[in-house]
Amino acid sequence: MKNRLRNLLSESLPLEDLTHIYNSYDVIGDIAVIRVTESFRKHSQTVAETIMKIHKNIKTVLAQTSPVRGDFRLRKLKFVAGEDKTTTTHKEYGCLFSIDLAKCYFSPRLLFERMRVAKHVRNGEVVVNMFAGVGCFSILIAKHSKAEKVYSIDVNPSAFQCMQKNVRLNRVYGRVIPVKGDAREIIEKRLCCVADRVLMPLPDKASEYLQYALSAVKNAGGWICYYDFEHAGKNMDPVEKVKMKVAEKLESLGEAFTFPLGRVVRTIGPNWYQVVLDIKLISCGNKENDESS
Ligand SMILES: C[S@@+](CC[C@H](N)C(=O)[O-])C[C@H]1O[C@@H](n2cnc3c(N)ncnc32)[C@H](O)[C@@H]1O
Figure 1 (cartoon, rainbow, N blue to C red):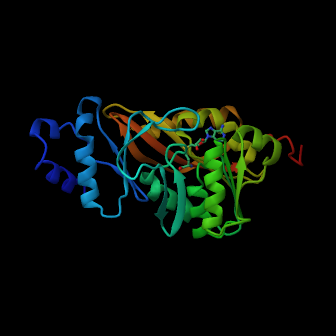
Figure 2 (tube, rainbow, N blue to C red):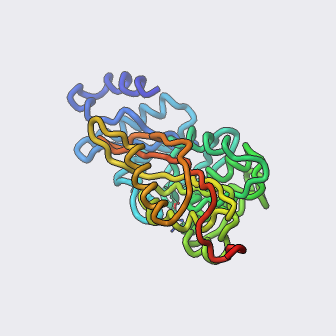
């Protein structure tokens, strides 16, 4: 499909401009999100119309005009063609996600990672998703595992609203529990020592929140699914760099752990990577309500 875009565009755009047009775009439900650099924004309409020719189901094309940023991890979007809207329903592995792209984070590129995590969840597990967004990791887990409960925290009220809707859409009431607020406060007040598994899908702040993830894990031990961004030049391994950083932190907190898995989830820029570590905690360190203390 991506090559088809370039081929079709070559019929209408000059070759020197074509090389500056991003060949990749995201399809989220019936919305396509394109990226066009400032100087080539004049071609947005042509790119949008070409995408709508390729995907007959696309009703709207939006252009991403800023990087993903801020606490809510949002990007600026500009309407380009079709129906002027930012809400859609995306389907992934049989799950439906209602999303307002202007108000909530969502990336269709993480689908493999979401399923990888869901496949690891064992029967009866309690999961805490610290940064749940519209609930995609949580709902996929509920649908594709026998987890008992997935507490799904997000601080963004719009993401929380979409998550509540998605719980209804996917009929996972009582198993996915949307919680609105700051993950630190929620864990300290309500979710200390409850989890077999904690998900931390907020790579730019992972290290800062690690101690709260530890607090959520049961005293008997459990798993933390830890995401981070890492820079790695030539001959450097971003996964090893993250392992070293996390190991140092966990050792300083007195935790016993192993890293059964570490991998690059995706490349996010030149020499920059999103990395995931599956951390296995053998037993958890000092917890406030540790019965043995
Ligand atoms: C990168 S997004 C990931 C969302 C979702 N897990 C996904 O993969 O689509 C991170 C999410 O964390 C939320 N967030 C940021 N800081 C938070 C905090 N302190 N407590 C709870 N949620 C937070 C943001 O609102 C955002 O929805």
